[in-house]
Image (cartoon, rainbow, N blue to C red; front, top):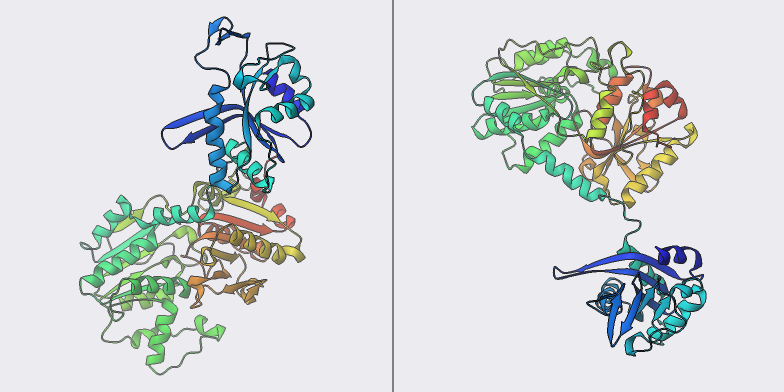
Length: 533
């Protein structure tokens, strides 16, 4: 188009121009301006372009010999007024405006002199001298009053209406809300398994990360408690137990009838009640835990039913305790063999039961995270099947990101990324920082503050309302919208793939991995997260 090309090369300095700007007002009016040209100190004009040979005969307009339904400027008037109204609504500014015409295929020395078109039409020749013709036409059609308000606001609003830089984007808060909605409802398979709880007193339920094991385990507990059974939920870690117990409390069920506690804490309670006063801070305690003594200290008023979650990490001695605890009562076990951290522990719960159920699929992780996490699933990485990410694999950088930094700058970069998440709308309780290192080697777990950000252990009483910073093992079974994975170096020496798989699958919205270039060299799969190009 001639007008477009001339504006690209001849638009006066400081002026702005937009082509094909569309507006829709309510559900009743919709229109388009061929061009909108703005002189920020003065206002704007809407330009109607009429190609071909344009003539005026006896008060009637013709285009290539055919009579036009409307006069050239008439079509642009409604659009110009609606555009001015939209700018006023957006920024409360009323820039002066007018309407002009361009006949790019019609050349003339003297334009039409009839009423509304006098001085308001540019010819093909005028397009070659826009630095002269544009100010002249502005003087003719735009009211002579400079705008007294700052012009950058209405110029930006006009540009936003045009939408040149529109990029599809969902805010962090909306992404969190979408993830929460997706996790609220039980799917058909989860409901089917829940129905079994009323028919079978003993069952083993397996499922991968994000398949809904903990959700179903909680609901089984609620179902039994509401039927009158005193029900105990047990799991491997204190943080998961604390979160599940908080969920139970929200259901207004008597704590004497329904509670959640970690297996370790429950054994300590029994030993303490037997007068043994165990020292949990002594690392040797858990290696020499007097399981048989705990069994002997079992109270007569044992729970009426038990649900065991994250069972894949129990050792043989603890299974002996569980069998003693649950003898003769309803007992359901939930586990995921692919998230078992200690290889020497049992691959499957040693229970004498004929009911074995499986939760298929996963509901927690976005597809990009699920796909990347699968590269660290031991059943899929056997014999080095995924030592390298398949060529051409591309991951959504809004959902899963890799950030590299020098070793000395990792925590500074972590602080920056947490700040960016907060600035974009993520709440403190939406974020968890997960170390792939163990507690004794992690620097992260010793931090209580990261810049202005307060950090909490996963089982801290304030954790539900703040940023969690803890190890992959202590955060097992939990989830947060935004997971930031750090300390890959310390965790790379032992069961690295399992650590990474556990950490990745905690995220319901997005993951950020922060590490050194050396970590990427050790794990080439991470290189697939680099932005292409």
